[in-house]
Image (tube, rainbow, N blue to C red; front, side, top):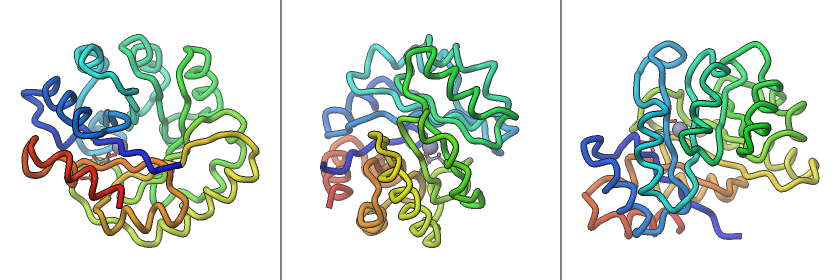
Length: 217
Ligand code: DX5
Ligand code: ZN
């Protein structure tokens, strides 16, 4: 199956989010990646459920909500009600990631688990019966525009092997520093969804179709 592209609206023009979502969808986006940051789990503050609710009517594609908040549990329902299609959480964000993933599933949404660069791959081993998505961070979370951490390619490969053994359909998403060059390497390592902020949103809306096409290789 061809790789899917999930533009991160972290790099969009926040004063025109609805138009930006519509523009990347016209340009070929497969999902819309929403980076939620709390200034505590990561050193940046971005958007909350109200913004997800505001953009929901403007998006035809699934909203892929990446929660970089701690604790995450008190906010799961709010993001689900706001229109998230998938909700992805970090094991470090709360004491019981398994329960958090069950909660996302109980809300009727797609649960995802995300590993920071310093988090070992084993962290997904007891979660693969629960998740629809594994996200491997190829930068430390908190900011767009950082450099892809090469070493994480091995973790993408390891995740792909574990997913193949799990015997369920689970997406393998990669987030951070994705360019046409790193996209190819991530896909060669097993990625099925690429998150990209900087490399999608550069150059204005007229460049989005070619930016997205370049990531497909
Ligand atoms: C980082 C976020 C990423 C980020 C990617 O904390 O999770 O989704 O926006 O941005 P680029 O593509 O610029 O590295
Ligand atoms: Zn993200």
